Length: 105
Image (tube, rainbow, N blue to C red; front, side, top):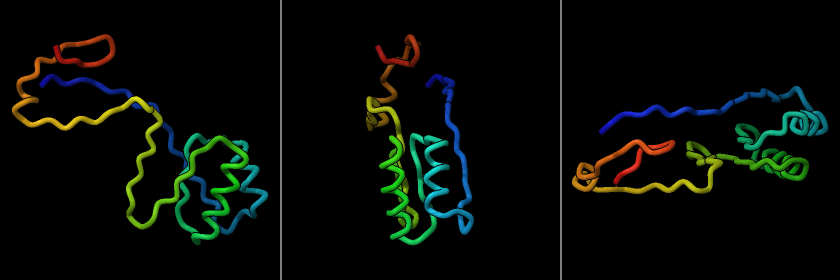
């Protein structure tokens, strides 16, 4: 199977707010940063939910609050599909370079 390169454009910013900010300060920080996706980790469930509700009210962010070792799907594209194929079917495909992707003919 031919290899291809995939460019990933992402930025992850960690902001440690623990014990240093009150609710008003956090609202100002979030409104200035304007994140598209926000993952809230640590803190009590009540505090995380209050922060989540506040962020949703003041921005267009999608907010995630994972529990334990929960894995999150924070995909921004809505037209991505995952297809599972048998090894036999996959090995029978003939991939060709398309405009921006590898395609099977």
